[in-house]
Length: 370
Image (cartoon, rainbow, N blue to C red; front, side):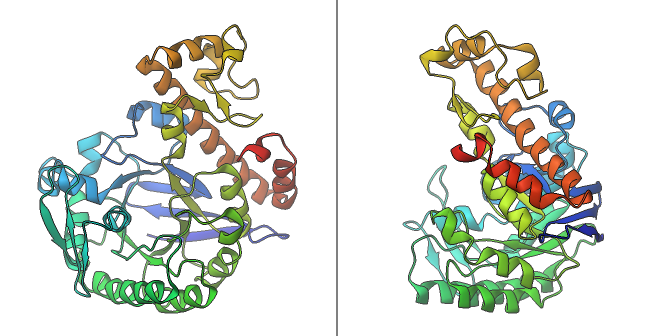
């Protein structure tokens, strides 16, 4: 399993590469649709293929609770269980566990948490988490780390950096599957010194790639970019860099310019279920009355099936009557929008024109809305 850096844009830190996994080669930079419970909501796997998805995410916390890692393993692993033959990434579930702060008890050895389904108590050590992710069988798995919220006291974040580094070494020590890539995760919140410390602690370990966590947890966009470029630049150049939980188009494009390779987020499908579409003109709320008699395509500049076959008026009808097809069609469109956008970044990097690409985006109507 090898990450190959093909080229770096001459005017930015943007990188074009490939990542070889057990289920095929991945082209970077890329956006990865999120299938929390082994499904990208409203999108069947054949459609994900046609949209150009290369990697799908699944969530260890939710799959551990239901249907259970044992059952998924019995089914032959996530690929067979969800009928997806391309790479899968499972996050550790740490973000979900630590977002339930009122129900968890944190120890150096692990974390105790309550199920969101029935309130039952569970305890994970890093070793437990690795065993569960190995049962699920994704191509890329993530270390168990402590994700901190924003805002948070510096002392609290410092403890999380230390604990995450300790857990990183424990995760590495117990991995057993040679067909899985294990990524470490850099934490540190918005504190530059803690980010640097975390990079030093995690970046020096023998991981296959590196997640950059603890961003997009409520901090202002500008605050993220006070430290993100330095974090990305300090990570090993020959390993993929994954900015976790980011789906805002402008943020993705700026992070690519800073040297980040991989992204994921529920944003495209979640906003679709709320009746909102990404477009070349910015976000479109299909509930607005202005679209009631608008028989033009959703986005004239988009070639996805939703835009080529359905009008704004029809999509608004589906959204306002709460027909499930509305959420499905908008989910397909929003995913196409981000997958196509990142495909265009790859072409721009290959041409050595990423700075101009980013400048053109920032000058577009869409950039003002993201």
